[in-house]
Length: 216
Image 1 (cartoon, rainbow, N blue to C red):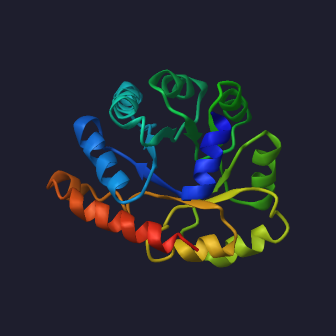
Image 2: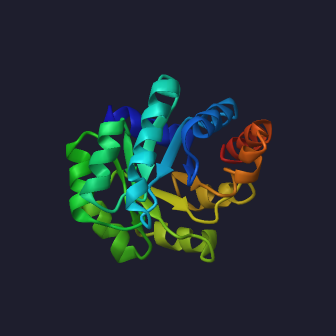
């Protein structure tokens, strides 16, 4: 299963990042993203509200039940073994973190899930890779730009990098051309105002544009 997910990331390139959207709204969002060609979606834990962790895991479970035959779902902002286990029980297939945590990376792989820890500097990127990360999320890329990615990829082109933070339909192609194998796209794609108003067709249209520009 891990190999299938890794191949899906390499093939489809885009992971939608969802923060603060739960339940039925999140299922409808997943359907809109899928209609736009996106097949991977990360639902993040809110680390400032541990009491809401179960809301995130319940949403992942709903997504897997509703769309698990079409999409691959994962958990984001996983910074502890506790949230990792909640994600695993809910059916998450990949784990995304903002940091490089050896225990989380190794436990993710041991549980049969795909590991995507966050790192920024070359040292952090190599460290995450040495712990066994399947992909390393370069975060945040906003403010650094594709030039930074290109410079990092020159000596580290054996490590699969994902660009996250400030990635949109307008610049995704730049990050991929610079050397990233994929990207995570959050606020620029998952527009909460559109979700609130039920304008899921706009999300589908934006997803289609994003996927077209990622086909580099």
